[in-house]
Image (cartoon, rainbow, N blue to C red; front, side, top):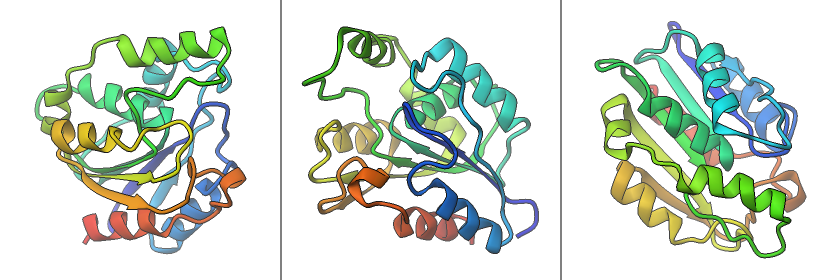
Length: 193
């Protein structure tokens, strides 16, 4: 593949071994990609000021051979990281899985709602993302208990993402039976051609 790299950013409360991350890592490595799946700091209590700088550190130098895949709050981390890149830096592509700007907070604790508020209400320069991420695809499920399907409109309008809606995949976690994510793999392979 000639130096193509993928950085997979897990979600809130997750690890590099959660959900479909190990499967996707294995599939990409088999196809010649270098794959990084960092353990994001304090995963149960994710904050912008710890996650975004850490992502920048583990991603290192990025270029048009670098791809990102995010799950849930991991998508937010990627978006905020990309917004802070220097002019002229291009990332080949991003896959956003169950990404969100606004979450359904029914049943959340006050502490969880505070975390959501930090990510939902702090500003991010969305037009700037398109300068840095050449292509993006956003995957949603029609029965995600946390991410309203209307979030797809924001990804399409603001980031120019191709939208794919899967039936009955929940929040794309192992609890939803999602241990493989062929759409993410297929979309990266299409971008990398």
